[in-house]
Amino acid sequence: MTASAAHGHVDAVVVGAGHNGLVAAAYLAQAGRSVRVVERDTVPGGAVSTIERFPGYRVDRGSSAHLMIRHAPILDELSLAEYGLHYVDCDPWAFSPGTDTTAPIVFRTDLDATCASIERAVGAADADAYRRFVGVWRPRARAVMESFYSSPDPARFATAFSGLTGTATTARTGPIGRRTGAMASLTQELMASGDSLLDRWFTAEPLKAALAWFGAQSGPPMNAPGTAPMIGFAALQHDIPPGRAIGGSGALTAALLRRLAADGGEVLLGHAATSIAPCGDHWRVETDGGPAQCATTIVAACHVLTTMDLLAAGGHDPDTLRRWRSQIVVGDGIGMAVRLGTDALPEYPDLPSDLPAHGVHSGLGLLVTDRAQLRRAHASASVGELPERPACVAMGYSAIDPTLAPAGRHLVNVWAQWHPYRLTGRRTWAEAGPEAAAAVVAELDRHAPGFADRIVHTHVQTPADLEQELGLLGGNIMHVEMSIDQMFFWRPHPDLAGHRVPGADGILLAGASTHPGGGVTGASGRISARLALRRRR
Image (cartoon, rainbow, N blue to C red):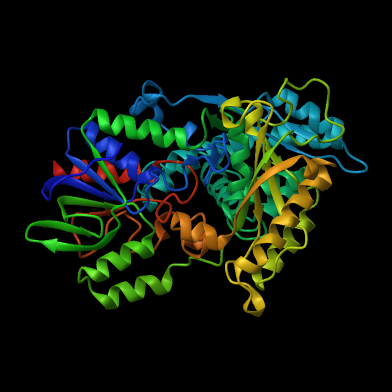
């Protein structure tokens, strides 16, 4: 939905029509506020959008699987199913290919089926360990997820996690000793690296590699502190698996737009904001696509560094902005995507015979069987080089949603890590892109022999492309690094972690730059909308 509007005062202007911006706008409009969204792009949704890259194909520009928003209250609170959003469960929700000595591991929503697959692949001991792992980490992951949907506050976090001491063990005795020991054990495990968590629970490397690669989708390598909960999130997939929105990832955006329009909200596409400045007792957003937009509340749902550019242009204190910039870690890219139109889906060998008709193509193809591959890829990227063997996630969702491709054809989205935004030797991504994409296809063909010959169309999104098309500065799909020092009440900076801008009352922050970070959650949009409504009251 697009609209043109004359200069005028509204209750709220949202800068950025990514899914978090649209979530914020939808909540405000639902509450009866007048809302206008300004967006530089001509395609709404940002990284949650789907377009026709190849004739007859509906290709995602960013995300493909929706893991987290299905655990959120947003879908029900905004009644998005009534506005056309429909998910199909991704079951199996993931799989890892076999090796010379192990069978593939298939992760089903059903825990028993998953444990049976693990037992076939690597033995009963790790299957039993996985069952216990899910029992311990399911409530922990649920607590982390619940913490995502409220402003980060140390006291609130302490209260939320204090109830989890029953998931930890201690040899201390006495009521106080047991509780203190359990809390110390719990916090240590939550702050541990993903690799140490895996080594503590499991023996077989293929299972460790699959779970490590699942956890690494947030960006940091699994040897980094505080990454254990990223692996622990796998436990929640046995409650609600990832969902594939029918029609593509952008179906979420389309439903939000319909909801917003029904409540009187407006979206102005092709209207890039150029400044946010005080204007009497309210705020003014200048754009290069039309008249200024004035509002009592501004929700900046774009990249936090882009927000700082807008504030600087509006006269905000330059020394403060400079300090914030120096302490926000954008990083050096995470990875790249290769979108493939094909005449067949990948055929992975030695899969079990009891799979549904769509096989494993409903799930994340975690094409890694040894964590050494992850470590080498990350090490290469850290010095500006391309990984010799990129770590890949293959998604063939046309197997469960035939609307994505013409009859007899398929769409395969491949995400690969790690790829640096800045390359050594003054190489540009225009030069390196074809080589990097070829390595991604070769890795997929390694696990599904002959698949490379079935490719009809190819679209490559390098880190530089992700920045240019989607405004993902530095090629970082999470906006800001998801390392522990850039999360929770430190994200994107301690001064800004409350989704507010000190010294700029009425400007609120949303988007992947803010708590809880990247991924399709809608959480920061919901938080900023609640703050805006509370402020109005």
